[in-house]
Length: 499
Image (tube, rainbow, N blue to C red; front, side, top):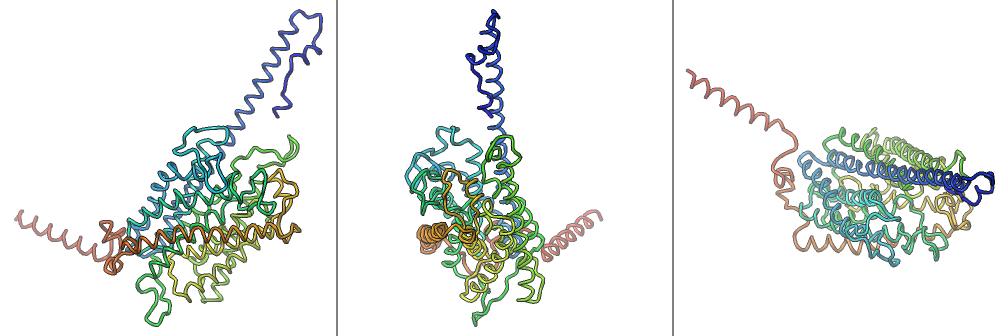
């Protein structure tokens, strides 16, 4: 657009009448008008792209409400206040730690291949590389990873440990992973200008690995070190269901997460006005944004339906909680490749993700692993499948559009692109598991040794709402009776005084 509006006084002079006394002034005036129009188009493009990114950030942040509702519905009523407060604090503590350190470690360029070194506390902001909307968007991703972890350790964790692990995860562990695969300096990033991993880099577009697998591995170690909740397995080791108290909140949370995922996946383009090919065509990045929303939708729908019938065969019931988890598993899986696969492939992604989740839950019960929200199984299992799926089904056309500059970049194995992308993605899975295990596993182990991780048996029996948060989230029948008795006593006393 800007090139077509370039204006030269010399060029215009040759077109204007040489006999005109004001041809220089006329040419200068015309060029000034063209330059003003060109600048206005540039300003509008910046405003449009930043508005798109800010709106996407708001959508991703709204997922925190979805996490809160999903978590609240999935735990027993006596722990509702606790789990909702932890979700609030994931955002609050994550905001401060990501502002001070996290963003710099993730995107502080120029840097090395391991960690960012600049932009602590958003110094020198904004710049041509980053604006405030980009920070807000990346912060919303960071606290999503922390929210995954909090679900795994729900109903049995001391409140102080949430503050410690959440700050460490969002301020150091997650940012370093996002630097590796999303920063232009990261060793595994597809945006590097040279020395791409296996000639391709890791195509984890919106974070099946960077967000979901990181949060899942952290949550796994927290839940593993704590051990299962009291009563989750009987004396023979058989699983005992500890049902969440509200299917309504589970469904509400699921729909809020679904809505937010349209900022999570399509929003990861970061802008919408980019042109593919020649200017003035109907096809551009706006089309890729729409396609990504479609692949996200289809993967979730496919996973939900597969889970519905799969669990029906397994248990004989149509279970709404299982379907909601299956739906979210489909979303977690498609997140890596949502921008580079065809819609029909997204259906396959969701179908397999549902069976991965079902299988992971069976393994968890067999090994007596207790995760109240199935978070490690869902985000870890389905996120891992999503990374592999991308390496199998990424198309050449979409890969070159989303990651331009290397026309011979390897793409999906099943699409004829060879196995190099799959090799890069297997390395990503391995490195994330090792890094998060060493860091977050150590944090949870130290908290355990310092008696700062798990609550006492008495607190667990009574529920964290009573023991740690000053009261229950709901008024129970016994409390209603106490209130009625107190009111009746007050009424009798008042009647006696009147008499």
